[in-house]
Image 1: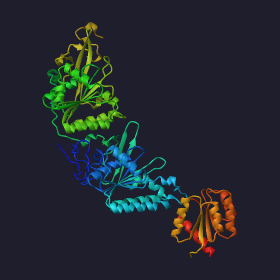
Image 2: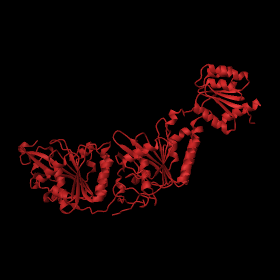
Image 3: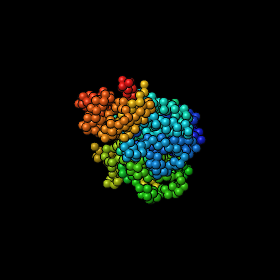
Image 4: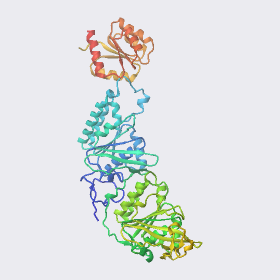
Length: 513
Length: 123
């Protein structure tokens, strides 16, 4: 196993990173030795370990995107490390910010404030003016206050909300640029790592600020999900793309987009047996580790049970499996399994099986992928079953779910996990189709289950369509779910038309078409 | 260069007056202020010598022009400060004796330069 420790040294990385920080990587990321934790679980991972100290970073996003929350995480992480932290506010008052922060559970007691927001007197006591521009009147006292505070405190972390306010204090764009650059340099020379926000919009673009900063973090909000992305990080690699983000009652969480190629674990690509001799015979040994298998078939034919059969056998070897239920209720599954001799409750008690029910619209694909990642990396899970693919597509929020499922499967594959995708086809009988969602290209193995009508009786059949790592039996066998477990019969060699569902005996020439 | 004559600042907005007084005060000029027509009248009648005047017409009615005429008759140069660019306003100001019209917001350096020029002329 190639395990590369991330670069955040223990005294700098003060906050916990989502999942285990010692992620399995092949060391492709460039990691600087010293990083400052942002305090946001998952964001440090996106930034390859955290922020590089003594730089200035821009945080941009519309209203309600979580800029201030991220800033609070950043300062709280510093304060927890006994660093000197300064919050410079040009919009909200100190009191408001403290109240909001405490509501989310941040400890703001060791954070210094410089409140430059307008006080009520400005309105009530006719303090508004128009004779000179704000640049002439207010810039100097504000600058003076900042200089005094920074000189006195020598902060190591500064969060400034929002830099765009300074635009009103500059007579023109050139002056603004010069002032911001000089201001940031002043802070950095005093030893601070600066995070500043901008209120960019179409009518007031903040492109200039993006050029001036050492790193740019974007926060975005769509009806379906909150997104965080990094577009610039001088001197470091970063994880590109749109990462899902959550603002909860305890602050912010970032779920880094899953890049399968970043994870690798050595494993033996051995076959894992189903425990049913005939089935193993069909598969020429079983399903291999690190492969993706699609179990496809119509409703009620026994797809989940077939998947769980592999897990039952794995549990016997002491291996752990996990089932993500997108459709069925957990209790139904438990009862169903027990009725067919799969001791699911015992397996769960022993920790060799975990059944996770995923509620509709609860997660985005990135969030779900992070849950799976944590499971695999922390619990050393060897089989993952997604029940079902259409449930996954319906339950998760966002677009492009096939791509996300692809990435998740590739990741699991790289980690040596046997992936079982349960795929339901709508047609009970009729023309055979492998899947209806265009995912068959993903599969290393395809096992199909079918209903057959034989002399007026409904039967089930099982067959293997594809197997990348080994040969397989090309016949179809009868398949039965009994109270003693799965039963796979002898090859149905005397029949034809199995894939159409209308089975005919080859020996009866009169009924041939 | 500095004279004892004061700069009369006429402005209805208290904060504007404060700021003007603050910036001009830094230049060492004597300042007197008026925030209403009554105060303007008092300043015109008062003992303190008014050298030049800055009249912000914002919030005043037509009566302001009468006071401007008084400044003209006393040969005191003055500038009119206006919140917006307007040809009619400029014509009215000049016809009542103003040296010029300045549009808000004013540039501090520019303002001090013009006042300096007017005071020099007074001497």
